Image (tube, rainbow, N blue to C red; front, side):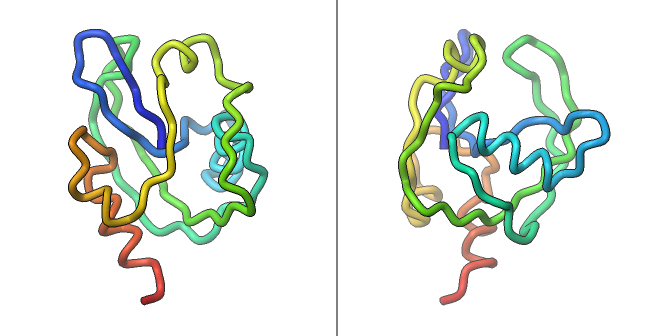
Length: 125
């Protein structure tokens, strides 16, 4: 996950992701964003959730999003942020892997807020 430090807002953590390019499926966008933000080359697994949050981007633009979440298996935990844009480099100040149980009790905001439940509902016991 990535920690965002947006001026005027408390820090928050989000999953890798972003918007779909024209003509791109959610699965294609997930694959591309995963590579751009983490350096991980992997196909997304099944879609496990869909949310439609409203929020304001760091640039001040109000958004009604259509977000899809996928389970992805990575062969290595190494993260490569060399493909981040200038804005991402400025705002995405940290990254780390979380244990599932950490997500519900993290001391900073985590989005989506129900990420731990999404994972638990889609992970074999």
